[in-house]
Image (cartoon, rainbow, N blue to C red; front, top):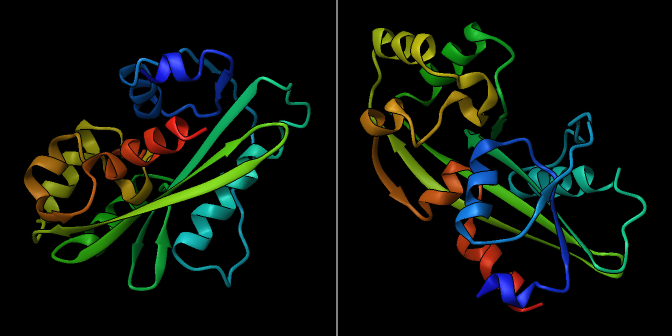
Length: 192
């Protein structure tokens, strides 16, 4: 369905996230992956969705020469806890501190998507509330040792072991927590 709708577009996903790439495959999209390095720095006064909207747009900016048929999709996800953004941890120690901070608390996962062509840009976002149980240091260390939390906002992947054992409740989209609010992206692309 979406493949037919976008048959006249050259869809470009600018993301090295294997989860986002998999979601695009599952949507049955024809797409290419193009990566350009961006330093993900945002103004300190931004909060919540302002941060992810800013970063999704920032990731689209190196693509200066889009062709008429190009449709560029960039995205960014953060974990929002106590009025503070948790991005990807720099090392295992920072991952441990992030997970300890999330333990026993509610946080929000916010993802923004930029859909950009030569003639327009639209930025959409989604927020999901996630409730963690109390995590022991042993559980946190086990997860860090056996999985790869350093490439994930908030140092965890919902689709991994810690998601199975830590999440008590969610309000909103599972896929948003995994890195892409697929339902919102689908709706926007179908409306092009």
